[in-house]
Length: 168
Image 1 (tube, rainbow, N blue to C red):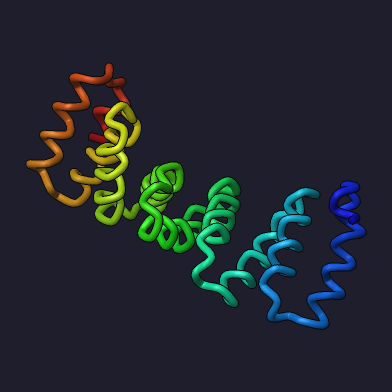
Image 2 (image 1 turned 90 degrees about the horizontal axis):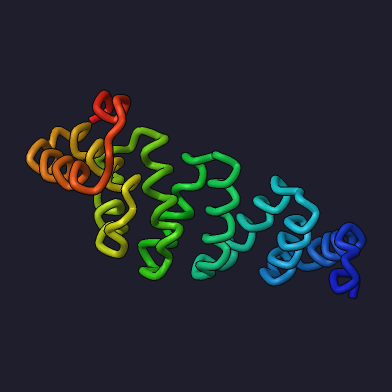
């Protein structure tokens, strides 16, 4: 009732009391996380998402929500376990696969990002930023044959800037 009236802080108090009575109830933790998200208490929401995942590892929606939350907070390394878990089980999660590529790039996991970047590009070959990251991944992994092929594709699709040549 309080959630429907947008009284999320009041609802949180009630859900916290309910969780005290039954801490193994995944639905309570999920609803509590949702309330925290509504009032932008992201740290608390992340804690509750983790609790849902702990009691139900098959709940891919919670992996998605937690991965997205951490990614949006630029906690790339922390987001990766949740996003990778999701995208390896849900092939339709293309937004999250794109996030995996970027998070791996920002955390210097160049060899690991390659299969994810290749998959994103198979789905949407117009993502120039992913092609750039893939090319860098090949270079950093010393896979020069694939780096050259990706670089040539990049030249055909995009006007490269001076700083692009420094990374490639």
